[in-house]
Image 1 (cartoon, helix red, strand yellow):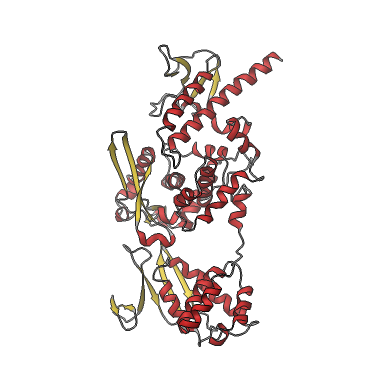
Image 2: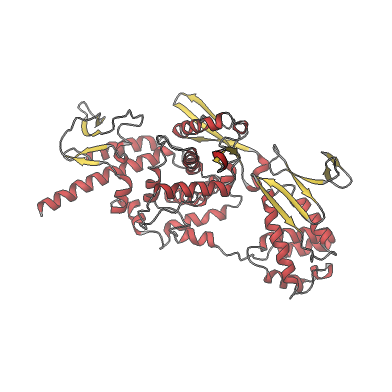
Amino acid sequence: MKYDPTSGFWLDRAGVRFLKNEFRPDKPTYIRVTEWQWSAEHLNREHRLVWPKRFPREVKPYFESALRVLMRRKAPSILRQYDLLLRHLCCLEARLPPLTKSNLFNYRALKTLWTSLRPSYRPHFRTLICMVLEEIDPRQGQVLASEIQSWGANRRLEKGKSILEWDPHAGAMTSAEIEVLRRHLSPAKNENIETHFARVFTRLTLNTLRRPSQLLEIEGDGLRRHKTRFGETAEVRIPFGKGQAARGGRWETISTELAADIEAYRARPEILGSSLRQEVLLPYVTRRKEGDRIEVRKAYGALAKACVQNWVASIGVKSPRTGDLLSVSLRRIRHTGATHMAMQGYSLQLIADVLQHDIESSARYYIDAVGVEFIPAFEKMDRNLGGRFSALRDAWFSGKIVDGQLSVGQPIFVPKGKAPAIVGECGSKDACGKHPLFSCYTCEHFLAFRSADHHSVLDYLQEEYEHWRTAEFPSGRSKVMKDFDRAAVGVREVIDQIENVGKIDEA
């Protein structure tokens, strides 16, 4: 490939023109450019822009020039959006003034075209037409472009509406739904590789709240562990998303359990011998019908989404809120994480930073969703009463309440005072590496003693919570703070169940 400074294109040996796209500066993409078609492969998919044959030849060179500038930095996948926009413009031309240079500088004709556009196309059109106008006439085009920038796109805010109204299929999941989903995220015995990919990818999305395209672009050496005086930590290097891709990426902390799960996935025989293992952190493995042949490939967003949804459907995760199959999408996980951050008091700036939004106001929906009247009633109650609704009780406490000491496993006690109080036992026969108190009240193997003083556990958790809270940075709350919340909810549910049984017996 050789660069031609005269045309501004890169040429291959056959003389075919290419535009160098530096959306990822470390891994540029070359867009193949012909007279009537632009195409490029990005995230394992081909994206095309086909110029309509009816597109006015008078202005086509100016639109091409503007798109050449845009596509040097924009993600190659946006070619499809501009393809749809150009087709839409041709359809409108049949009933509106023709797309000529004079009409482009005619304010009334341009405004008529703007109002006739579909709302979803207007942001792309505004960016493109401003560059076209300045390309045709820099002085007059700049004046008109500044006016166009003030026009409101009036896009249909379906995303904002689903967040604000806590839509059960597209909005944020409730705390109960997230807890039900978490139960299925731990490694399972003898799971197939498709399930392993879906589960790990869901965990990674939930842990980082990053876009699928970012997570699928993590390189093979993008996972590391290192020891500190506080213990071992794990990090993944996640590329920035959308227009921020040119800034590279940054290392972000994940749980060591998730890191071990990722390493176990990469150690599977199907992946271990693949060259793609060196390129991406999470290659996708599928079995072809012909002879059950194994194929290792680089996944893309739609494929990862379908894989996750098929996995959730296969295990039959039910929503405590609706009673139907839980609707899980990677976008919905991001909505959920951001909304729950707002519930916990994170600032607008911090939520926008976590989601990597260039415009902070785009994250305001999550702040507003916390106080709107559409928020599910039991979610409001959970925030104040610690999960006393039956739907939440089913979501958090999945163990059993038993009478007396069974001596079937390791005793669970409150490490307080000279004589620690035993509050239950672990019914699992396998070794457990989790905290022997904080994790027990949300574990299915926990056997809570009916006669134990579970109120003392709440007191102990409160003291520990205050101790950790004083050590926290004022900008937000870490995963440790959330673990305290979950443990306290589980304890309250045990207390509620014991008290309710007692009332029934008295009656």
